[in-house]
View 1 (cartoon, rainbow over the protein chains, first blue to last red):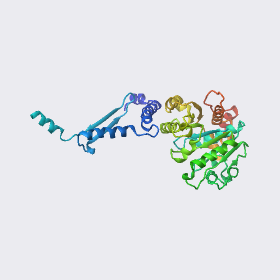
View 2 (cartoon, rainbow over the protein chains, first blue to last red):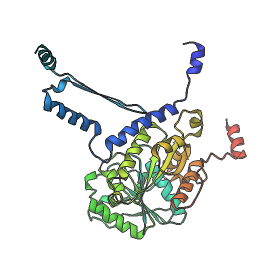
View 3 (tube, rainbow over the protein chains, first blue to last red):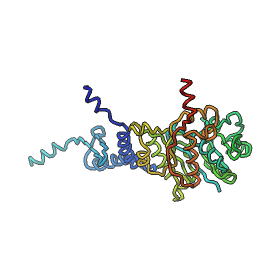
View 4 (cartoon, rainbow over the protein chains, first blue to last red):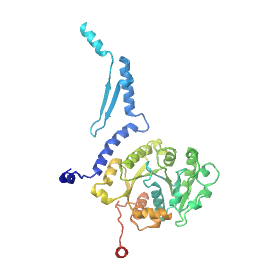
Length: 94
Length: 271
């Protein structure tokens, strides 16, 4: 690291702490609420129910990721569905 | 009818017991009759901070279980005669704190005192819930540090949902007490500022207690800082906070150490 970059690198840590807290607490207030269900767990469960109603999926083949941002959060659900491709191809053939 | 105040924080080690002792003593010095109740069953410390550790005979659990009456268990402070202490049990389990038992003790104390100040244990378990359950108002002790602020937020949520007042649909009065504050580090941007903490937790500010060696000195000798070093910066901050609790409008400032010319000269000479 050069002298100049180390000189400019020094930035105060308090604003970082404030921003991290604001994002974290915005989510925890929803999630914890007044002891009600965790929002994420609920979403997970209900989405799984809907998928299971139509296709048989393996629990291990479901990936759920949450990316929490200040403005918006992304709930990413990755479901590996077996058999669908075959059926689609069969449908094309017919 | 007394005001029932809980001093709570979620996180441990932020200064709940120190603040309970200092605020209680400041209120008592202002002429109010005050009882401090230690809810930290199993890990009591308020007796030690108050310098009454050798005078404990009966405790809160003894009173709840009917082994002793309130008059036997209450310890009167030797320095301020309107200040009393109800210690926690050191040997019993938190489960001995029954809801009915605690309700009765608080109701009985409310008849005798102007202020019933409950020193909550850390955490969100039974002891902490019992300490806040019957409160009319709460002081949330917070250090300008991420984990403390997060835990305070959680405690504020509990105060607004699990307490008797919340369940009755009434609003719990909540005040923020920022402790161990270092104005210089905050100015450098290396510590959360009071504005940051206030913006995040959004409850009214009761006071800012500056970091000071006087707080440790006071607990070393077993006295609330407002009694041991009443002119010190933290003691003045606690005294002003106590006046705000009594409803006085006092502008919040951060007291600084008063260094007289004599102190200064003396220090130079010794060094």
